[in-house]
Length: 636
Ligand code: COA
Image 1 (cartoon, rainbow, N blue to C red):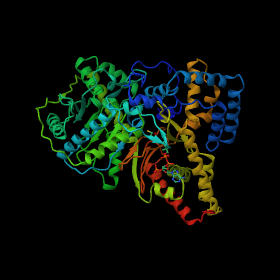
Image 2 (image 1 turned 90 degrees about the horizontal axis):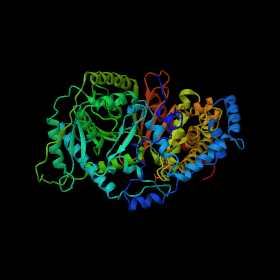
Image 3 (image 1 turned 45 degrees about the vertical axis):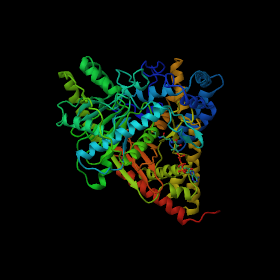
Image 4 (image 1 turned 180 degrees about the vertical axis):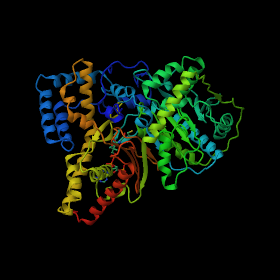
């Protein structure tokens, strides 16, 4: 049975019960942070606004137009009018939100982490945690795997120094400085399963921050100190020696891949976790993983696939490990950051989404990839190093049963996921720019066209927009299906329409998308505000207003297209699963002259097919360019 899904929750479908009480393990993110330039920067950022009530509902009605029926829209308009009437519940909730905004660093962020992530009970694997596929690296054996992994660790430690020294260059979007908090949340942190709600702990902020990483090889976990006594990071040579020791100590797969437990439904894992850590050894081993700076997964092989399927297979490896017979047990999916290195040059990462979005993770990975490409400085190890410590687990028959169940569930999940990674090589951002259009909007409009060609209707579409212009900002939703995009996609294959008219409609659709993006990144989109009003109702113990029980609202949140742009300097692509059973997950990295796409769907759904959508995307992009090139513009 399908429960609530990640991006549905993100948009506010989750039950708001118990939202107001912050979990004790989730520290208010900036409260314990260091002083200095980070704090000065953060303090200078504006706080997230609460948009005007009428503005949001006017835009809500507009956003519904392309995706609901006329009679549904009429009904929604009545509910909206009722909700907004003077002295009514809408105004009351709005005032409550405005009060909250005056007293919080960010009125949304704590709610958001709870509702979108920690209260979300489907497995994090596929449903919430993205994978990231890097270009295939230049090695193809164990030696190469170890050497590359050693360099990767050294690269992350170099980045960590920048985090520790607060010297990460401030990022900008549209000329405005961004909140840098997420960089301080991704290392030394971990999700902890609970019986009803999870938590995240960040050990970087503890009085004794961790100095070790965890390495997992053949399903066995090791604790590896990555700093010398004098505080200097281990060199690549030292790390190679240590990784070799780990591999030698774990030559055959362990009997019990305990890490696979982290792939379970969160309630199930929460219960098993409570049992697991009753044993002292287990508790210490789990704590060592949770406290570690990050986890490095030295993977075993994946199924052999033809070369043209390599990237899709690598995406599967990063997203879920391929199932219990392959690498799904070679993970701790609760860990915020896991780097994954195979023996065949495959590498990438998987990250638990609660503490951060893709862009800071990708910035870290860009740095690491750059680091691994630098010529190696040869340092010989100075002092003998302590043997990496194996983390032991005592497995009771009950836990063994849970592991078997987790394997089975993971395999079902893995079999259900269809993942296609394609490199669209005809053009990249360059063509849209040459036509004076926003590349992101161009791609999103192409996706609308692809979907319409397949299904002859438009669907609610989610694109992540960054709210990092605001202190502790996370994301809002760009609703890519607009009346303008609907007009364009309906006209595109209509033989009765002139090309000039189609170009005009294309331009309008692209401009509409870019305008919505501008609204979203400046805190004036609708979805987080609607969520906030609903949460405020729960906070004030007011029954959920009808406008949120309306079928149109449910339709608006049923994202058959869940999409995100995650750009990077490295030629990589992020990937994630669909958020509804009959939907698609689409992540893309637009480079200058090509675009990497990762498209996912569920095999269990007869209506969807990742390869078909990927193919339709390619055709839509090519056809849109052809249209632009074949149609003289009215005015140049
Ligand atoms: N003519 C010519 N060039 C244009 C243009 C136009 N009309 N409009 C935009 N461009 C240029 C931009 O200047 C930019 O140039 P650059 O490559 O030199 O930087 C480039 O095209 C890209 O702009 P655009 O395609 O409009 O997108 P964007 O970079 O502004 O990104 C979002 C849009 C929505 C992706 C971004 O605002 C965002 O929010 N990103 C975060 C998403 C996120 O968090 N994802 C992860 C979720 S896990």
